Amino acid sequence: MTTASIIIVPGWRDSGPGHWQSLWAERLPRATRVVQDDWITPKRTAWVGQLEKTVLAAPHPVVIVAHSLGCITTTHLGPAAAARVCGALLVAPADPERRAILSDFASVPYAPLPYRSIVVASSNDPYCPIRLAGAYARAWGSEFVRMQNAGHINIDSGHGEWPLGWALLQSLEGEQPAGAAAVSPSAVHASPVAL
Image (cartoon, rainbow, N blue to C red; front, top):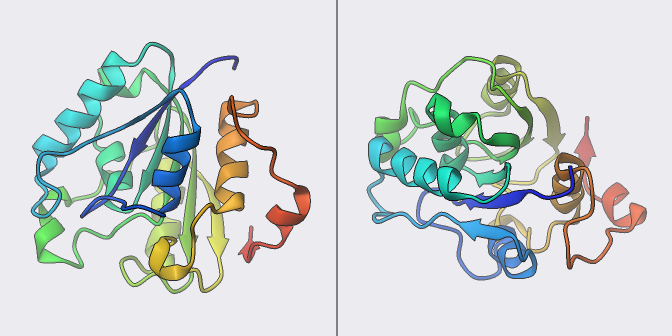
């Protein structure tokens, strides 16, 4: 793939300064960040609608970079928007049945996604048990990357730039993102991951 539009899809309460999604948005010239009208009390129709609008407006085939509830939002895309997606990095998917405020996003779709996807999950994520994340990955037909003790793969768990995620994004794009520094192999291998 020579050109892709990167769409960053934050989760519940957005991804603040220093979060890897925010850092990546600053260094990826082709990135668009989805902005929701209500980050605190999310509604599936509104969140999915905003993501679909962003995907359909993108000038190139889309690679989605989603975190937490953003992953679940992505799996609810309608067919027209999903057809524009060529890859998705789905990091630390949420379990909307664990928190009442997220329940509008249940039931999570358990159908294969029509594009290449990678699910990254942590063995001790407080928002989604690793077994459920693995079940999502199997149902969606996703590659599965299991990280040990990485929390919710956010600022609170010490994930700023997150070189492993950057390398996974590069693999989805099929090339190094424009304007990006190369990730050294040692930086990737230093990340606590078991495939």
